[in-house]
Length: 191
Image (cartoon, rainbow, N blue to C red; front, side, top):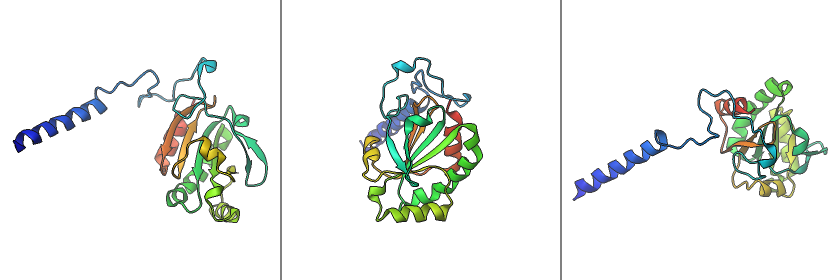
């Protein structure tokens, strides 16, 4: 009886692996490994606003660490990494240097890193300023003082990153730290 149960378990696992690899429906918006970018969306008016992939990112207005007011809409035309983070978060600390290197390398090519500090989760806003200085961050650091933008984007853990194309469409969401490879790959796929 145990052998039959084990055999059935192995078959179920095998079928699950097949389903997730070979038989998986890739759908019309799937990006193959040969594709150089996500497909461009022709009918912008038909794209709903939301937080899922292939939906238009909701707009927000927020202040930078320097006190300047910015909105997500003003960066339309740029390929954006929208990253939610906190100073006390170990994966956030690990990914920041790679994000800075990417920003320095690609800023002039219409790529942008927007780092939304969820300031409501910090002990003080001075901790954010110290962090930015210590890490030498030059990309825009946005201060979510009340956690409203984090709530709008349904942020449950740090870091969480949204990859948004030049038309404002979310192409990928990654919860957890970004490796250099993930960062460069996802940004390079944005049309």
